[in-house]
Amino acid sequence: MRNIWIMWRKELNSYFDSPIAYFLLTMFAVVSSFFFWIYLRGFVEYGMEMQMRGRPMPMNLNEQIIRPLLGTEGVIGLFLIPLITMRLFAEEKRSGTIELLATSPIRDWEVILGKWLAALTLYACMLLLSALNFAFLFKYGNPDWKPLAIGYLGLLLQAGSLLAIGTFISSLTKNQIIAGAVTFGICLLLWIISSVGEFETATWAQVLSYMSVLTHYEESFAKGVLDAKDAVFYLTAIFLGLFFTARSMESLRWRS
Amino acid sequence: MITVKELTKRYARNTAVDHISFEVGKGQIVGFLGPNGAGKTTTMRMLTGFLSPTSGGATVAGYDVLEQPLEVKKRIGYLPETPPLYPEMETGEYLTFVGRLKGLSGAELRKRVDYVCERCAVADVKNKLLGKLSKGYRQRVGLAQAVIHNPDVLILDEPTAGLDPKQINETRDLIKSLGGNHTIILSTHILPEVEQTCEQVLIINRGKLVATDSVHNLQNRARGAESVMVEISGRNGSLDFAAVQQRLEQIAGVSRVTAKQRQENRNTFEIESQKGFVRGDLARAVVESGWDLNELRPAAMSLEEIFLQLTGPQEAQKDGSRKESQ
Image (tube, rainbow over all chains, first blue to last red; front, side):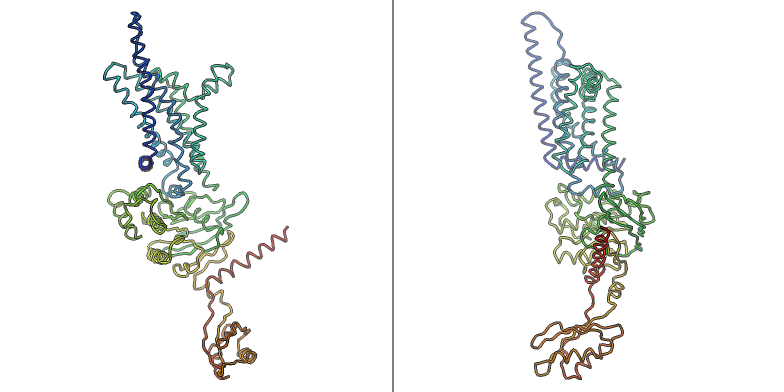
């Protein structure tokens, strides 16, 4: 436990000692706020249109702003997650500091978990910053907080699984750029394969679309539903990603 | 303290370390000597648990490297070839992190950080970024990092590489002063370093242990035949070389005399001889023949020559046998 905490602190410090954390936080805040503005404007225009027509329609902050914005934030995350994970192991391997970690009395999985948790913490900070947008909704409106909380939980789980995959890929190479590029490609793939199921009904298409990290978010967490099956999907992905990272670290002892 | 048995590391194409066995006692400083690519680093990495051996094993402080790696790692301080520094950290911050990693905490951790900073002469850069330190400081921070948890065993991979002569001396003194409390294995390809700092030498070549002995014994062993350099000049400026050669060869025990250098007043001869040869006889013979004896010194074999002698023929043999097998 102590070792995980030591690694987590060290990793988080090095994120915030370099410009990368500030860049990511700024990017995420700016882009998500832009979309917040778009959705908010749509909401307001919709309301005015309704008034002009004189026909009351149901209006819901949760459905019309919070839900689409959380979905968009998940997609923005896809682009930024490779930037979070690419350095995790690649940098240690390049600079040789991996030798320090591997010869210290700390287990591989403690290193991996510490690093992954630090990456997840950074992502959580990004979400927290963008949550300021929602503070306005709570000040001037009356949205339901429960779907919002569940949506955030879903986003964290989704990011957690992508971060685990990114951590694994970072442990395969010495080159940060390659780690980042491959992770980005995989994030993108896992996003777009959800649409395969829309055109094809064959089993392979169903399997592919099941693999998409986004469908498991859209179908439950986004709606404010806590579904065990989707949570299990993410937890499994996290476990597999970290498990393969551990195997990859172990293989260093045999190769190199 | 360290027992290595039949340690082997094989890669797909070559064998980096080939059935190496040796033992190191408590408090000893052992030099691990060999040309580049001989397998020094690989052996050290296997001792520290960074690499797993293909076969064979090792125990450090009574713990098996493969069975109880965490116990071994608690007792080992390791300085890899390139000091494992995080450029974005400050020296003090880094040493605190490593100390925590090795299991220190609280007041003890702060005490050790201050102590190693003082000991390794990095106290003045405690608040500087590691990425901005000079090579000498980086190496010393690496050393500080290795000793932070006061380990029983120190494994140092080329600790003086890339340092200037003054820093090399300081580092050697530091390593020497650490011996006694710590068992130290240090690798190097610089021979004087071993002569100066180590009590015992392990010479490794092409993955095989070629010699393991104390520095003193090794020098004696390789000295089998002694050779002496004498500088002789004639009284009136000229010297009859043939006569000198003849006279010297008559001395009991002398096996060969070669004229090394011929100058007007400086003629040097190398005299190879059997054991039991008396240098006094040589001096007397020269003086009685009416020549001047300007210099007489034993041409002691340096570790360098021993090293070449031990690694050289072996290499030739190996190449030979390889050719034969082809």
